[in-house]
Length: 287
Image 1: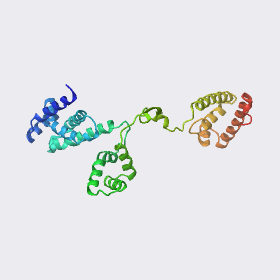
Image 2 (image 1 turned 30 degrees about the vertical axis):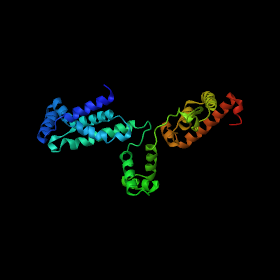
Image 3 (image 1 turned 180 degrees about the vertical axis):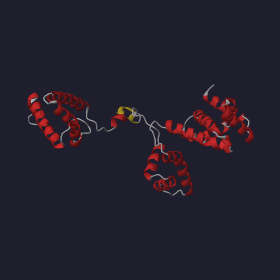
């Protein structure tokens, strides 16, 4: 059975499911909540599959398979059935609509583009309402400029104009592969990836930097052997960590004044410079 036939069969089954009267719906919900009656939950879900299909059809414009939208909506429907409280005296369809819609929208946001969009409530509202609001404004006044339309949408949804412009640009074009030719139809023109600018060092510069860094680290480790334990502790804590310790903190830890810590640190630095020059004479100019 192909996808189209499967979709039609699913719709046919959903549309043939009987409607539930209010009392019948409530009795099934009570059986599920109190007795964990799976059959009662399944009856509620099947009776509301037409609601899932109707809501899925509203999201067809995002280009995702109808069957996938329905499946995601069904997940939301089951979640609603699991959380429904019959004592609140609210029809299940009213309660389930939010869960079905939320499940479908999350699926669309995850799969519509390989580029992740905003996940805040404002960004979601912008994603799902921008096209509708833009079409509504255009119908009302064909002479509105794109910037004016963006301003109106931003005001209506409580987001910035820049957010509207960015989302509009995303919705107006499809994802493009970085491995595609940089010029359409010209396979010898290179890939789009070749046109991206990088601030990273060139490969030979990276390798050279790694080698130099390893060499300097060996020199430093050798020079540190010329210090006593207290000098090593102070130099490591003050100079060789991302968050250097304060003179006060080291003084308290070692039981000496912060001025004494400063003196020991100064003396240790001089000893390191001398040791580094002895290990590598060409460093004399730098020291």
